[in-house]
Structures are given as C-alpha cells and as structure tokens.
Amino acid sequence: MTKKEIAALAAEELEKLYPDVECSLVYDKPYELMIATRLAAQCTDARVNIVTETLFKKYPTLEAFANADLAELEQDVKPCGFYKTKAKSIIEMSQKLISDFGGEVPDTMEELLSLSGVGRKTANLILGDVFGKPAVVTDTHCIRITGRLGLTKNTEPAKVEKDLVKLLPPEISNHFCHQTVQFGRDICRARSPKCGECPLNYFCRDYAGNNKK
Image (cartoon, rainbow, N blue to C red; front, side, top):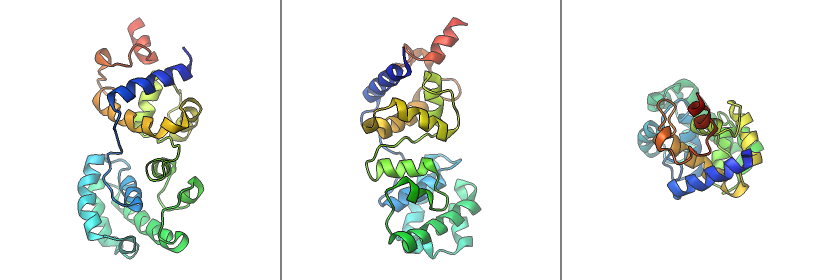
C-alpha cells in the first residue's frame, strides 16, 4: 500500500469519526486565534482557553494588547508557561499588525512569519481556519499519528508538513490535521495508544509492525 493510499484511508476513517471537528482554541477575532496559538506552545489548549477567557476581556482590542504593560501581561499569561517570551511576542505582534498591516491579520505565509512569535504551525492554522486556505498544521498529535501510520519518517514539523502536503488533497488538509488532534487525544495517544480498538489499525504500519514481533 502506497503512502498516498494510506493517507486516503486515514482521511476516510477520520472523517467518519470526526466530521465536525474544529480548532479547540476559543476565539472571536483572527488576532485572538494568533495570540491563543502563541500561548498554546508547550501548554494544553484547555489551559489556554481558561486564560484567554479572562485575557480577551481585559484586552478587548488589538490596540489594548499593543499598548499593554509588559510586566502586567506577563502575569496575565503566566499560567501558560514561558510567560516572559510569550508576553513580549504578543505585544510585538500586535504592534506590527497595527503598524504594518492596518490592524488586520495578513493572509500569506510570508507576511504571517514576519510577526513576532509566529512560526509555520501558527501561520498554517491562521491560513486554514481564518482564511480557508489549504494548510497543514503539524502539531505533536499530527506528527505522532502520521509517523505511526507510515506517512512520514520525519519528526521535525516543517519536514512533516512538506511530506503531508504531497499526500493530502489541499481541500481537506487543514481539516485532516484538526481530526488528528482529536484522534490523538482519544485513541492514538502518545502513551498507551488504544491500538486494539483503533479503526485505522488495518492499514497502520506501526500496528502491523508491532503485531509481527
């Protein structure tokens, strides 16, 4: 079975499981998704949502974030970890959005990557969820699951993204990545994956390999 055939089967099975899955980060405005994603680095989405519920009320506009007191914002985002770096980049990205993009979140990879604290993962999430463009968001769940399935041998996000772009139809790529997140939480866990009850195990290379041992 080719990687493309495995990818097609995975997409088919995940669509049965999670047809309506969406990004688990809560936001109302595009820049809020960008900030939430920045906070989510090395932190769970559940914790981020708790923090941003208060944060987005305290700073209701992009200008409020751009003019925030650094020390105060650090304390506001402290529960998410790495709070000094995250607070600094949130202020800087907000300022650049206002100064360079008229307060609007840009819709190209190059422009998004010019913002402080924004890497390809965040940029792809914005492109896919906000602008509906083809995007591959390689978070830890996506990397783990596609590796186990045999779709990639890489573990670096940028390399995994490059591999998956070749295998996934553009129109489903963003949705597929959201599905792998939920699938990774429910079944294909990092520790003690539920391989015996996994609906993808009949074509999973990792499962096949383990059963031969």
